Length: 110
Ligand code: SF4
Ligand code: SF4
Image 1 (tube, protein in one colour):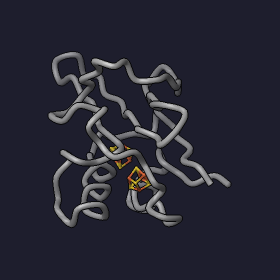
Image 2 (image 1 turned 90 degrees about the vertical axis):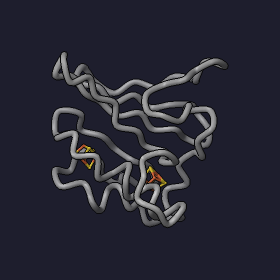
Image 3 (image 1 turned 45 degrees about the horizontal axis):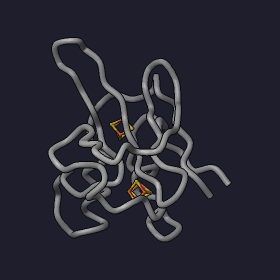
Image 4 (image 1 turned 180 degrees about the horizontal axis):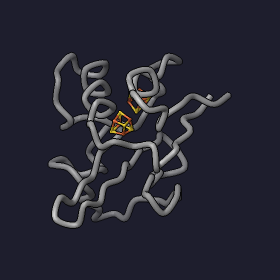
């Protein structure tokens, strides 16, 4: 099982990162989420970053989906550096971000 992304379907609603922290820590905050919404209001630009346990980061941008290893000094989007966040564990087999995403931008793939 893995997460599949359709970048152009994202509304930047933030529900995915909020539910991720809720299932992980029982609090509604994007501070500890494994999926991070990155937005630049002035440029009207946004995308997602997913931290995986292996295979590094997944970048979900309007231009497409790419993956990369985080740099050792990566601060990344959001208030908490990517390297300090817990990686995605697929919610132990029941990915909540895919369930709550209203547009199907995040879906589950076998
Ligand atoms: S829940 Fe879906 S639409 Fe909302 S920010 Fe996350 S990926 Fe985008
Ligand atoms: S599958 Fe679960 S742990 Fe992984 S990003 Fe989505 S909500 Fe977070």
